Length: 285
Image 1 (spheres, one colour):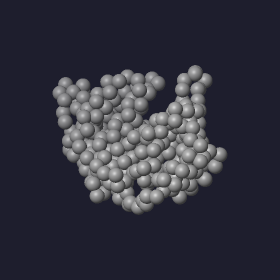
Image 2 (cartoon, helix red, strand yellow):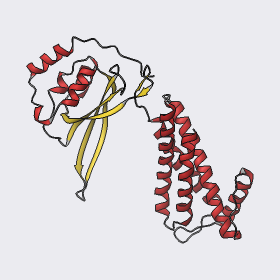
Image 3 (cartoon, rainbow, N blue to C red):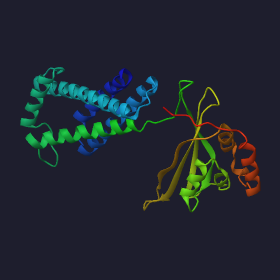
Image 4 (cartoon, rainbow, N blue to C red):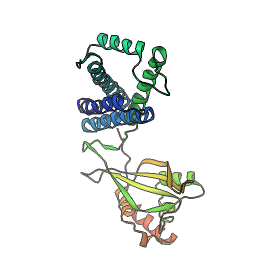
């Protein structure tokens, strides 16, 4: 919480300066979303250092850090507003004094949009929407932090990308079931020499201290060109942190584009060889 709040405090200063001096409302809206995402990132950093694995706890931490950062952003924003209005900057840390000054701003307005100056209920509504734009990304980003953790070693896993991609099978559910049944032949047999517009990307998560825990993550990635000729992509998770043996993980990591022509017989032999070793699933915590 200390690390996340310190990071959010730094972001709050930057956000307050942008919010106060920037004349373009659309840029301010984007900056608000970036501020919320940054608060979530600061929360994830602190949670990672604290080795917190509970996702609901992560979401709560994201909310607290986002709320504290938004509060500090208001402190700095009102400091700048007071300096303009009274010729001297004032820090409003007390919530009663802060709300009183906010009511004064709401009664008179402070900025224009489309030639109109929002006041009263309209301005209060804008402030509430702003709070949601900050808090929701902070909560969701913190909640989505679910890197596998190796309990005996007290270590987060390290993420490694496979060098090759894999063809998307017609029955993706069958592939998922095969992998859950520790049959990896359908995956190896569909390795590609080069990425296609729609293909599977594999990632390996493994403990940096031991060979005890390894996880597989598969994403279906689709790429295309939009009307402007710009590359676009979308991702869909097929397998999320499936526990696999280190031997299969190493085989996937060492698989290179020039060695992807694995026949069914060779794949079966590989399965037989690697399948001799037993593997115990571990609780991720």
